[in-house]
Length: 139
Image (cartoon, rainbow, N blue to C red; front, side, top):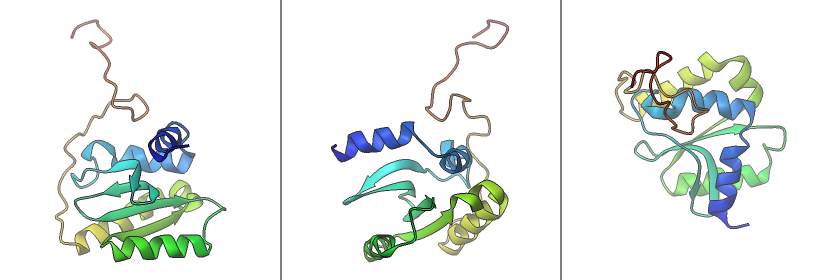
């Protein structure tokens, strides 16, 4: 399957941990930074990336933590990216701590802690869909 089609499939089949992280990162909610999910970079598809900060974030299940991940992380570091990996259980059980760790890395990269630009993103599962009108039928 071509990488763009595979990335679309991954976006449609996110894990619970990926969904939770995406909810916090999308729509410039996190420090005003633009994140993408299931994005192709070179030969790889990353879970989350902030290109401006050169930051890759991976939410890993039990199939990770092997030599392939080490080689992959090395490739990203050679391209100038910072790589953060979190176990799915960390994301689900310690979400605030995971976000704080990401924030600390971003601050260390020289970014300011700015308020989110989109405090009320659409509730449409992160697909950017907007509802038309409110519950009262007004636009």
